[in-house]
Amino acid sequence: MTTFVDRVELHVAAGNGGHGCASVHREKFKPLGGPDGGNGGRGGDVILVVDQDVTTLLDYHHSPHRKATNGKPGEGGNRSGKDGTDLVLPVPDGTVVQDKDGNVLADLVGQGTSFIAGQGGRGGLGNAALASARRKAPGFALLGEPGIARDIVLELKTVADVALVGYPSAGKSSLISVLSAAKPKIADYPFTTLVPNLGVVTAGSTVYTIADVPGLIPGASQGKGLGLEFLRHVERCSVLVHVLDTATLESDRDPASDLDVIEAELRAYGNGLEDRPRLVVLNKVDVPDGRDLAEMIRPELEGRGYQVFEVSAVSHEGLRELSFALAKIVAETRAAKPVEESTRVVIRPQAVDDAGFTVARDGESLYRVHGEKPERWVRQTDFSNDEAVGYLADRLNRLGVEEALTKAGAKPGDAVAIGPDDDAVVFDWEPTMAAGAEMLGRRGEDHRFEAPRPAVTRRRDKQAERDEAEQEFRGFDPFS
Image (cartoon, rainbow, N blue to C red; front, side):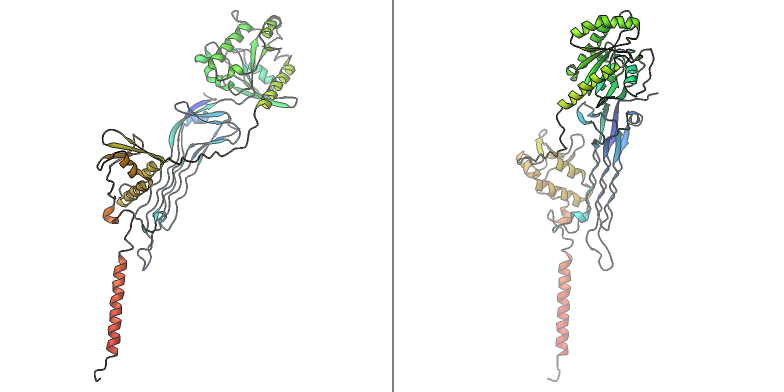
């Protein structure tokens, strides 16, 4: 049964925004009291948050599909819809978020660090929010936007100061068990360690973490054994410790050749590991043959420039010296790092000549419009409502889309597509035609409140005429 997972593909979907409401206030003696449709609620976000209590991506391996809740639609009486609930997904410290193409979207290190993996859709505006001096009673509302849905890859890279690397059964798990309070599984057969183990070591005033990385074998960087799955866990470490077995029972192996093989795999993997400081630990010197071999090979390794320690996880020989040597390197590495500044908000103003959209010709009679605003407006439009379509045409005209189409050579009747190529809205362009004109007259105007006024004025004029006639009749004297 799988108990540790450090790489998963996650399918996230943010919540959709709620639709706006088209409603008219009605009460006794006021059949048309004005628009009162509320706005739709915002869709919930999908947020990844670092949680120190989470150490594996196992939950997402079993349940890879995660979706936030949708926003509620608006209602009459100026009642806005409820926002969708954000979906918070806890991830281990050191999780890297990538898209399916391998591009890094976020590197989550540190308790509470968060990343919005999917942003919820905006809620649509109700007709009360769309009312203006020219459009006093809109008979439409905007639709809510769909939430972002995409596939992401979560990859866990262990956050540790020291990484123990070496062949299977070299004694890495035994070392971490005596250097720290970690209790990894230990046995004398290959591939005992199937997951990286973390331990916390205190040496003087320095506290650092040490990781026992599962055993590497020749060809690990090409996918053999478990090496490729766990080489990523050494990327964040400040120092690499080669644990060499001086008491191996395999006749074709010796500490020097083991070191060469592991170094070749680290070079093949790359990712900056060639610049990390290294220490060499000759383990199992409590065995007589192991001590003899360690004394023979130590001068050669020191001649290569390595700092060498002879240790035993059984007798604890040499562990104190090793622990303080690692603490010194970790402290120097931390001191050399630049001081992290507080989070700053980077403001990138829009270019003065940026219109917010582009118009490109695609074929002889098809023009494509790309841009955040035009595409969002199209998604929010109810194309079954002529007045809503007219409102969209009015917004596009104010943005300058019609002028840009004219400059691009578009002629009346040419096809214009707005939106992604695989999901675009295509219509025949008529620069002077206002959609929904049968009801609105000129685009952008609303005469539904203007029409009754002449009738009311005429009734008042007739009443005045009757009053004047009555006054004249009352003042008439037939005998005068």
